Length: 135
Image (cartoon, helix red, strand yellow):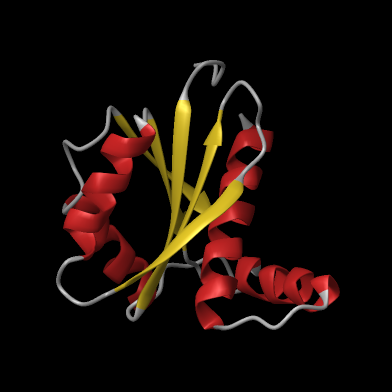
């Protein structure tokens, strides 16, 4: 399936925060959008963003340990993803190994102050960029 003309949204799902990034399949440049606090309203907030962005494909970062095996966090992400079923035509998983480390390194290189939310949003952009490059 080609990505051209599709609207993509990526989530870096954590237990405290969810990083959000978006891209157009035509342009193929992922942009950090936002960070959502996990406070009970996160699914509604994501639904709003999906509607606003007219999202066709939702890409969710998929955590694994260094051996490539599932972890407790993997189960948390899978459970969370089931709450989003039906909101978009397609939900895909993308390996998120080391994306938070890469995100923090990029933010350090930018030389501006940043917080944990900035790391999560940048990690979501890296996840989305990786997804687009592999499709």
